[in-house]
Image (cartoon, rainbow, N blue to C red; front, side, top):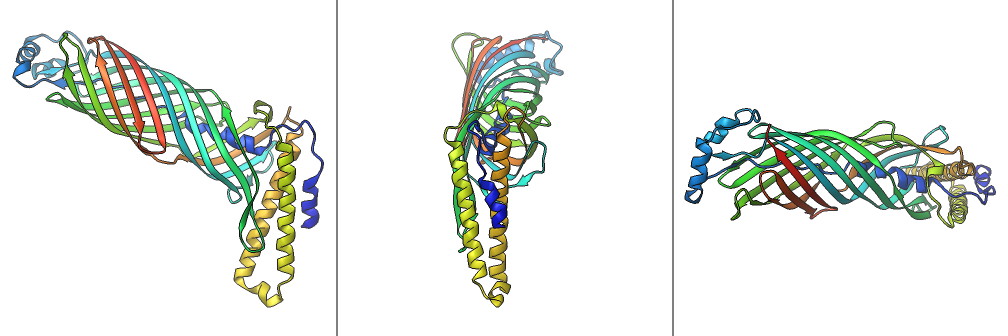
Length: 393
């Protein structure tokens, strides 16, 4: 095995600019590309109370002039103040979230995949995304809004990571560490529905949407499901049709965990001093093997037969072989950046599925409204701003 490890320390081209570790940072961005929330309902509100008596009488006596929503006329007769049945919205989204990466496998130039989940440690992986989405919607029923979503995003991911191998005592030590940041572009499309009910100036909405995000580095679009329950209250202002809404609620994000794809080396960026870090890492891997090999050879046959010692040796040998083979393969691949590619397979998930949200909407009139929402109280922070225009169908 020592001969096997010695070949890892072959000379490296001065042109080497990228290693697997920059690629690892690059592929983690797939999660953030799908994390854009698409919340955007308006509210059907039932007016009650003496101060709204004139409005209630007006609603009951007026003839509902639109085709949608279905049963809109009956809802108006019951005293519900319905929004216009169709809308066009433009959202700005910013989000930052911590990620968990598991079951990582990587290969080079369409070769075999290395299962490196055992030796890679990612103490911190943070995604950030900004984007715009266009959202047309209609009220099918007085209590059910449906919508489509078309979005463009600019996700980026900052990652700290390293490679670890055990020594003869079974303690794992870091042999390579670095950090990087990768930025990309994404396109998303999807649909959603929002069941909602309004009673006495208050309302409850259960927003759900399903989106697919296309990113060039992925084999298949990334699928995400978002669920957002919200509870709020509407306040009428002095001017006709002007209202102010406040709400609190939650935001639950779930993404398909398995992801496969391929990334060209030449699309990634430079890291100064990376070649020296790889050299140092391979030297440490070789030293770790010599220590483990010396410890094992100094054991007596009965000691080597001990299940504890045998398991320790097999674990250390497997980790060292994986680390050495992988670093060597990465080094050999990055020497030819023009044609080099990396293939990967991984499972990823947000560190926290839920976070808390607060928001507000100012309705200028029944045609125009402005909305803002802020999410916090977990490893995810987000802001959403929206401008919406509504009209009757």
